Image 1 (cartoon, helix red, strand yellow):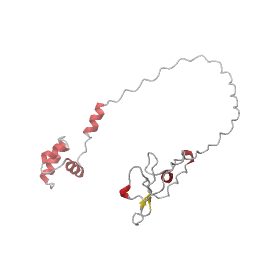
Image 2 (cartoon, helix red, strand yellow):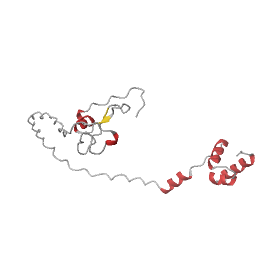
Image 3 (cartoon, rainbow, N blue to C red):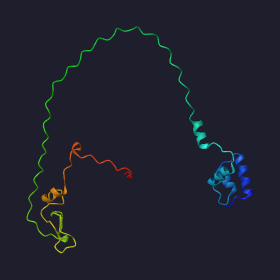
Image 4 (cartoon, one colour):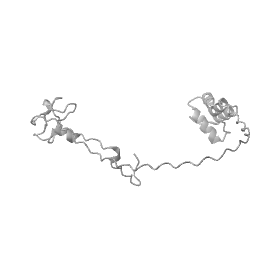
Length: 183
């Protein structure tokens, strides 16, 4: 699409006639878009018009009238000065809180002897803890009876799961390095 003198004249005529950019684009036809009309009008220095969307929103929501100033109040009789307050009693010192003793973890269910369980022998009743490297010929799984509700035996549950520390005891995260990207 090229801006010929004829198209520019039609654009100016429609713009000055109060047509919308969409109407002008439809009038010019042949692939002229609303945005092309707006851009060309801007480059030609045609007078900008207020947005019809903003104007409609302002008309729809009239400004509330300012509130009348409050009426002057009559002077109230002066009250007697308040009586002095008694000082709050100082509470007796409290003994320090008892130290928190961490409970020992529950003893795992003692399972049977570890067996060399292969991938094909795994089921929901045996420990699925891998032993060795998968690429080695002696790779196998633990095979002891599982802790109820877990995929591992008691011994391997102690390795796989750790109790979460209370928030106050957790180490604080390090501050980000200067210039490092934020997460």
